[in-house]
Amino acid sequence: MMSDNFDQISVGDRAELEHCITAADVQTFADLTGDDNPLHMDDTFANTVGFGKRVVHGMLSASFFSTLIGTKLPGKGALWYEQNLRFLRPVRLGETIRVQAEVVHKSLSQRVLTLKTVVLGEGGERVVDGEGKVKVLKPVSQGKERMDKERKAVLVTGASRGIGAAIAQALALSGHPVLLNCATTVADAQAVADEINRSGGKAMVWQADVCDPEAVAAMVKAAQAEWGALAGAVHNASAALIPTPLAELRWEQMQRHLDVQLKGAFNLFGSMVPVLEAEGGGMLVTIGSVLTDNVPAPHLAHYVAAKSALSAFTKSIAADYGPKGIRANTVSPGMTQTAMIADFPEKAKMVTKMQTPLRRLGVPDDISGLVTFLFGPGALYITGQNFRVCGGIVMA
Amino acid sequence: MEAKIKQIIADVMEVPVESVQDSSSPDTIPSWDSLKHMNLILALEQQLEITFSEEQIAEMMSVELIVLTVKELL
Image 1 (cartoon, each protein chain N blue to C red):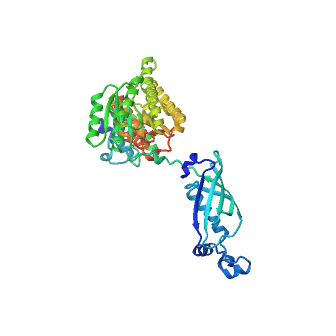
Image 2 (image 1 turned 90 degrees about the vertical axis):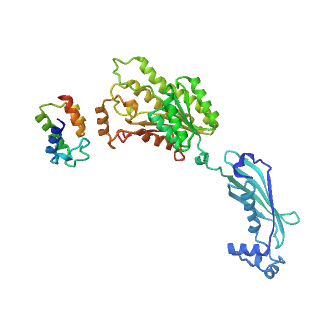
Image 3 (image 1 turned 180 degrees about the vertical axis):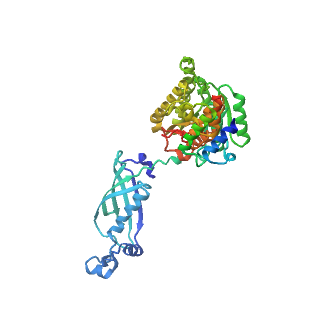
């Protein structure tokens, strides 16, 4: 019976072993404990005190309770912490004893078994009895046990270009099959997927608007159908980043950012959480922005508001589903050289570079490295965090 | 104009003009400290007859940014 089968142990369960006690056993016990009392070692002496022949150490007979508890009831994981004993009659050399234990009480809350323990002599009469208490240790949950050698699949939204494409490529390189989602730029996404597949990775493209819950649900199902188990998802999709002063900003622009980033995450996580819950856990990553820290860059209220909401949403998911083994983190890039900032004034990029302690702008691989780490075995205790990958321009 | 700006920078920083590259900054020219930076701003304003705003001065963190900022004013 294994200790992690505690739930299956019932009051009345019994275990037994037999052992013939030899002179060698007695000698070994005496050598080990230093108890060379002539009552156990010398027949002549034993005779002079009325025992006829020497007798076995009482504790040697009782020591087989340890064997029984440690190997049979409950077995592996047993912590024997209390025992009382009565030695009812001496055991002789060459006598075969039967050692028995029976569960008389089981504490579910303490994971403790109370055992009636008895040693029977050859004639079936009790020679030792007593009661013991054993705690059944619960195996400590080792997150690493859940990390499959074969990496599970990851869905990446907005994966046709820039940071999303780099994340898909890096995850594929580390062994994850990847689903590359895009709303419109299918040819770009397919080119990334083709490159991954040519390099020995596994990738598929799935066109879906993340704002559409049914399309997102179908996408998650497609990934399951293709690869079975899923490790999680990365929500990277974003609406176009066009600086717009409030006086010119239309609510539709605000709504678009909220839809793609926040509603997209809502739809994606809504479909992913039950899947990951069934698999015992997983990782959800959202791509935020350091623009939500400190003083936001000018005229990006729509983008910054949506990214802030996304980061807060991610933290809430981390809190709510941590007990289910689902981790959720935000990775917030600083200014990163992608098509998204192609139209930014060169001077703004140069100023940012010089304000950055590492004196350069980010590149997509800076971001993908951290995201890949979050899906790896080193990140099993990381959730609810917002990681800035920004060369130090923001220090939290 | 770019050559002239680099010469002013070289003079203020007391380094050979050949060592002043687009990417040069306080990170790469050891003598470019806060006092020299202030002198550089004054030298540029006097010799080029321009005036920088506080915001522009804050952005002038490298040779290429200085060149860009000056060009915006001319």
